[in-house]
Image (cartoon, rainbow, N blue to C red; front, side, top):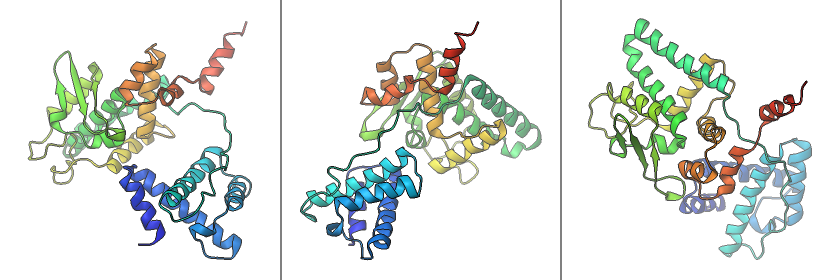
Length: 305
């Protein structure tokens, strides 16, 4: 087993997300390529020095003109690998131990404004109307897509959490409802209550959901209707709605951030938002209370005469 494969397996054993594993491995490959081209020698763990990592940081900042968060993410991948290598006895000391990250001003996450949320909801409604009128065979898929998107914006659940939901995880009544997230980030369970909009979206989908042997809540109805809807399919659904609504960037993360921002704007406390999102650290949730450029613009306008 080569060193990169061993490191990848280490990340998997640590229960890192597939996205993190792929990103770290890709970042290490790029660093190894840069190391070989710069130093004229093959990359190996024991040959990396603190000066190499500092020089690579400079290369990313100046030559490639990468943003601070991108540079820090790549440095984090290197640090993770070197820490693992030191702990497993592959190197005597960690060359990344004293490497400083780039200081950056904290920025608020991206979310949809009320106007953008209205545009999205209108695009969903138009899509449903047109599909029922012109493409009746596609209407079932469009009903699922609409319910799924509305569900995401009203629960703030992660992409992986939504795609793994089972029918048995959902309880929906006329005036109440909840979803059990069996395996959230860090292998933690939590219960997410459903508001009226989330319940309506679910009930509209469950009313037409095909009867199959599958227990997945969200079915890939255009296929065999037995498989659950995968994360990439969820992303494609949002991308299609974004194009129809004229939105530049609509992802599951944006839906999650919008859910949290809406709660914060309604005065919901930090602890409650953290619990709904499945955050164990309040500092992770605190970013949702940070003002973005639009909030700051509205603030200074209050001074206008």
